Length: 172
Image 1 (cartoon, rainbow, N blue to C red):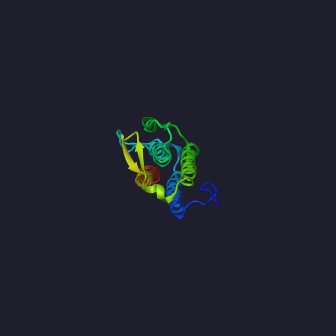
Image 2: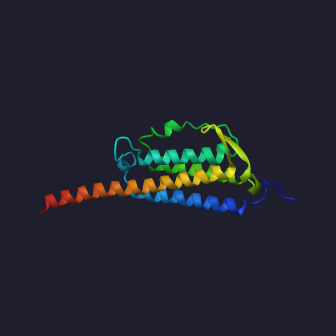
Image 3: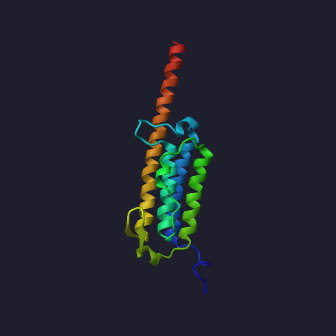
């Protein structure tokens, strides 16, 4: 007989991982078209940068998918995710890759029956089902993917329009 370790990942978790990977790819698509200067840019003083959104998304995924569902002690310091700066494309992609690898390793250990089991989330000081933790991680990342996409578009519009205006001034 096969043990859980030897058996393939349940199709539900395979589909979940595929959706999470797609969200990461959506972020990388934006990253790949932006220069380094765009990564730490903030549209307004109290807003987050693209780098912060990516660092926070990766941290939250690792926390909810891995730490909470596996009852791992978390090394996460959420506040530091909001103070990152100077991270380059490779650094940000590495954070996403590490979060995805951790999610894959976690999901490979879960059974479908565990989705209804409760887990304590220290950050919230309450219990959630494993299913809720997984759904929350996915929806949270999806929300921030939208933010990253909008900020990438805003940065490009602001900088491309300024460039076009300057060119028109120089070449009337």
